[in-house]
Image 1 (spheres, rainbow, N blue to C red):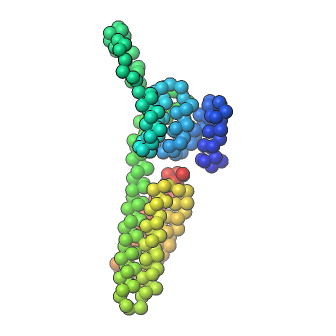
Image 2: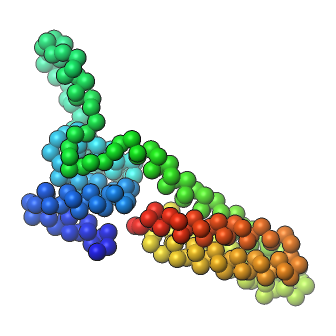
Image 3: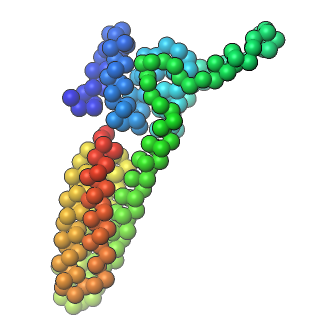
Length: 232
């Protein structure tokens, strides 16, 4: 079943009042795609403890900082000003305060907050490297293409072809940002075709375009070795 199908199944169970059955499904989704905003939001409706709800909502807000409904839900969880005596005034020990600051204890979640920064850093690094490669290659082929078009030396066909490759490079940036499933296939195909095209021009004597070959190979390897990142 696809991730979207699993999410729809979990939502159906939640609406039917079967939250305990929906939690493992949402948990499985978030294990493979920690940046699934909807899964975090629906998970927040399944857990009972306020601190667990807060954690889920904070994750959703991390993914989508502009989520107004998420912000409102978090505000509702924040403690309201009260005229009640403080913990110290009530005679509660420091251990009670320390317990309140412990990590989430809900066994249904079982997510490690310690791994979040590393996972987020890894995901952002992958996306950034691929986008930089696509921008570099896109602008490079664009410049080469226009130079060939205006050279007047009978290489108009090559100029058009290079501009087309440039447009494909730059257009794929949108897919990388949205992390669509097809991006792995597209980047792999572009890596193979781009390497071949760069090699053909290299052997034809266009030495300046030699650097395209290793960059396209890196692009293809990044896509193939990080398939799980492009899972939306």
